[in-house]
Length: 311
Image 1 (cartoon, one colour):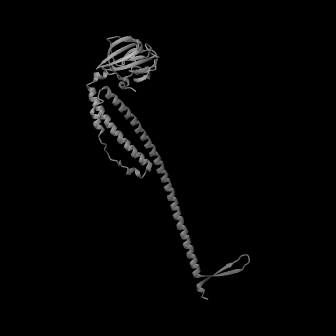
Image 2 (tube, rainbow, N blue to C red):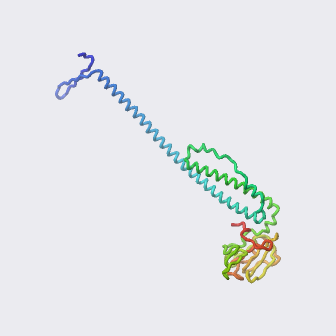
Image 3 (cartoon, helix red, strand yellow):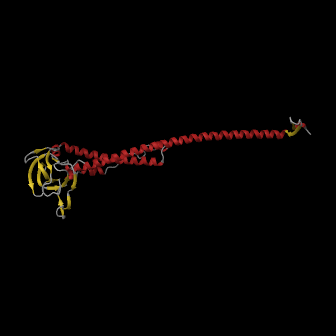
């Protein structure tokens, strides 16, 4: 047997002193060593790979949490911005109502300009640089931003309408200073509306009748003020309205005040807007302390609320 083809391995026991010998072929030993090296390198390689993957996964989780936190913050900011838009919309609605009232009292409600600008188109890009946000925001956030953009476009359009309308009113007001001072545009007294202008059931007969003014219920002797400049043309006692007075504001406008407890002006007095002219009472046909207030234009009673600009 060729001794060069194998190794003799001798093991000696310290207890018994006996020897044991093993013979292993060199090729088998080399193969085993190579297999061991390959397995060791493979295990080391896989261990390094999995450690790197684990580190990368942890980093990705941290990055994902950062993105989620940033997204939550962005959603909060979007909601805050949306609330500001909603507040702005409420203000625009108030401006629109105010604009309509101004046009009623200035006889500009039939102006052609508003109808012309109603047909104007709305321009602007629909992209709004959305690509800058798409990588960081979720789909619902993108939809929210697009909706906010559309709302802003609508508000911008409405703001343009109001701006043009107010410009027209401004030109009118420059030549109508005295007219405005003589137009009843504030509450004659403070209280709550107990009966509005229009048809109602009579509190005395129960039958349907036309109520030609506005009843403002309040405490006895609450001050009544003139809603505009004018001249007192009538102070009298009326069967239905009790103590009653009338003020001529010019331009065909007269205001009437009924059921008063006391008058503080007399016929011929010139009064200013905000001046106290009487006290609330319960005289005449009345079910309780209140002011019956009428606005008469060219001899015809109209709804007084259309002339009141205050909330």
